[in-house]
Amino acid sequence: MKNWFRYIFYASLVFLVIALIRADYLVFPHIHNYLQLSISLGLLFLGFILNGMSWTQVLRRAGFEVSYPEGIASTGLSIFGKYIPGKIWIIMGRAEYLSRKRGFPRKELGSYSFDAQFIALWAALMLGTIGMFWVESYDLYGLSVLLLFILLSLIIYTPFFHRIAEWVASKISGRTISIPKLPFTSVYKLILWFIAYWGCWSLSFYFLASSMVSEPLPIHISFAFGLAGSLGILAVFAPGGIGVREGILTGYLVMAGLDLPTATTIAVTSRLWYLTGEIFIFLMGGASSRKSS
Image 1 (spheres, one colour):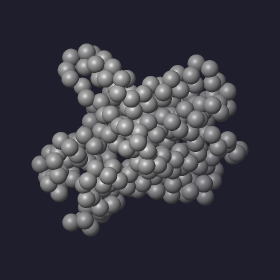
Image 2 (cartoon, one colour):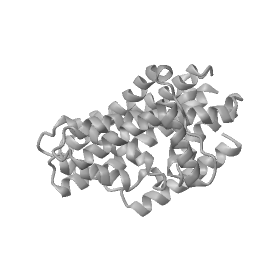
Image 3 (cartoon, helix red, strand yellow):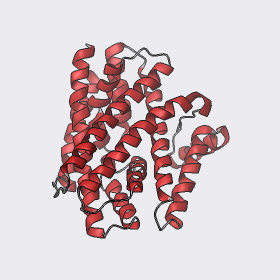
Image 4 (tube, one colour):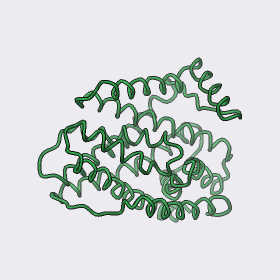
């Protein structure tokens, strides 16, 4: 770690601490079933490993010879960059790490990192859209999520809507904005990697929620995390999606039949749960970095 990556690394830790202190989310809840909690953590950690592997696959298909330890190291050591306002540094951090370590072109790696983020957003929103079909209040909310998913698909995969989105974004921001354009034929194999890690996180969330209540929960609860995660990514001005993700989780769980206090407790606890996974991949990233060196 050196130069810009070092600055990104330390700044992300500072903003992480600030965000968590302000949010006051570090509260450990009462657990009814520790076996389910253990399963949840196992799936959570597996999801983070697959996250690093999916990033590696993106680079390999682009012609960069990157090992899995290097992909996991770049993902893990930059994971807290999401807490820096703007969220750009979690995307650029992993590109900066590999650029400094392997001498790859920084700009090109950054472009592929943005591509990977858009694929991740699409995969998470797809799972969230599926989940909305199971809740009772699938009227305005479900239709809004479905339309958002369709719009994102058109923007990413079709030239016409891609150009319109870039023009609108450039007009709003006052500067030229470039949105990744990903032909479906070139990314459909990669999508499975992204669905795999979002699927692990979603199942992990289901077992987390189940461990906190005494009654069985419907399996579609798992899709809540894909919905909340995708909309949290879109909430550019909320560091790490703090506040946004918990609000969406609470709303989904209430629509799924849980009472408000229980839904709120699960949603707030999910921040600590997910932070545990981020710490895991951060430590694993450090170990992988030393191994790949």
